[in-house]
Amino acid sequence: MHERPAIEGLPNVLLHVVHSRWRQIAPFIDVSRETWRKLCLAGRAPQPIQLSPRCTVWKNSEIHVYLRDPLQFRPDQ
Image 1 (cartoon, one colour):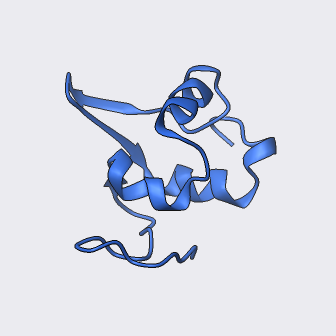
Image 2 (cartoon, rainbow, N blue to C red):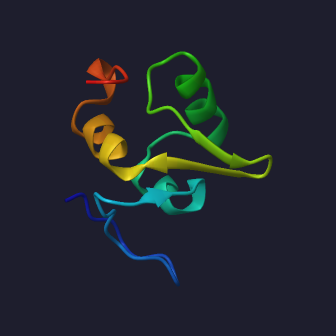
């Protein structure tokens, strides 16, 4: 599992079986929020799941696949 230093109140590991919001995945992603949004729109990052107009999450299992090889990631791998 990918580990980073813990941010206060957040775990320092990304679990496989849940969904996470941007604040939870940001420590593991090496791009800005806007760049991440553009990668998602281009199909080069895991697709977001819109729970409500102000709540977007990503599947952690897809984030792990992305983190293994960001340059070769394609949805539904």
